[in-house]
Image (tube, rainbow, N blue to C red; front, top):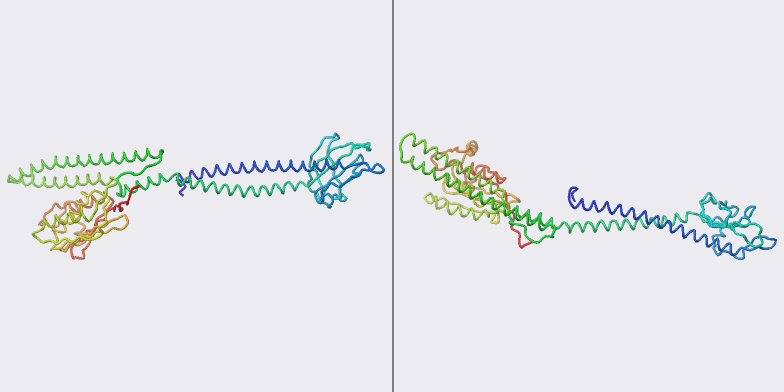
Length: 451
C-alpha cells in the first residue's frame, strides 16, 4: 500500500479515528468502572458500619461490648487491611483484633451524619474510612464508629479491569482495522478494474472500457469511453486530411513532372529533379505525420506475421524476374501496438531493400519478448561496411544510383519506429548480406472473455 494512495489515506484516516475513539472510550469506561467500584466499596463499608452499630450494647460496669461478631474473618486477622474501631470522649473504647496495637485517627465531624474520607493506616497504607457519631443507651457521650479498609483493593480491582479493557479494546481495534482494510479493498475494486481496463486498451487488447461500474464510477467510465471515441474520430479526420493533402500535392507534382518530361533542355532536367525531390519529401513527411497521429491512438494492434506474408506475396511478384526467395518465420502470436499501415510501410521498405540487393534470398524472422517485438530482415547480398551502414540513415543518401529507389526508405523506417518508441539497427547478416533489426512495442495477447 503506497503512502500517496487512496487506500492508505482511507485506512490511515479510519485508523486515527478508531484510535481516538477507542482511547476516549477506554478512559471513559475506566473512570465509570472506578467510580462504580468506589461506590460499591463505600456501600460495603457502610453495611459493616451499620452492623457494628446494631450489635453494640452496654455491658457490665457500663462498658461497650458486641452482642456477636460481624461475620467477616478479616476483622480478626492482624493487619489484614480491614479494621473497625469505636471511640469515646477519651479515645478508643473498642477495636477489631486486626488493628492489633494500632488505632485509627478519626477526621469526622461532631454531627451524626455519615462521613467518608481517606486516612493513614498501619504501615502507612492508605485506608478508606466511613464513620458516624452514634448515641447509645447507657452512654452519656456519643460514640464514634469507624470501619476502614485498605484503598489498594480498589486500585487492584481497577487495574485488573483496565488490563482486560486494554486487551479487549486492542483486539477490537485490530478487528476494526481489518474490517476497514477489507472494506477499502472491495470498495476500490472498481477503480482497479478501470485501471486494468485502461491498461488493456493501451496494450491493444480492447478498444473501450467494458463491464458495469458502481453509480459513483460509472460516469467516469462513460466519459473515458467517450474520450476514446472522440480520439479515434479526431485521428480518423487527421488521416483523411493527410490523404487529401497527399493527393492535392502529388497531382500537381505529377503534372509538372509529365510536362517537364516532354521538354528537352537544362530547365526541364532541373524541373524533373526538383519535382522528384519534392515528391520524395512529401511522401516522407506525410508518412511521419500519419505515423505521429496514429502512434498515440489507444487500443490499436496489428498481427505481424500476416502483414509480412502479404508483403512477401507482393514483393515476389514485383521481383519475379530475379527469382528472389523470401522466407518468413517466427512467433505467429506476435502483434504490433500500432497501425497496420505503418507496420507495412516499415516492413515494406526493409523487405523491398533486401530484395533489391539480394542475390536470391531474403529472410524475415519475427520474435516477441515481453513488451517488445523484433523483426529481423536479412539478405544474401554483398552487405555493407560499418561506415556504409551509418551513411544509409542519412536522408537521400544512396550508395548505388544503379539500384532503383529514393534513398529515403531507411530514414522513413527509423522515423516511424522512433515515433512508436522503437529503433532500427544494422549489422552483418548470417546470410552474408545486410541484417536490419527493427524493434517495436508489442501488443499483449487479447483477453479471453468479457469483463
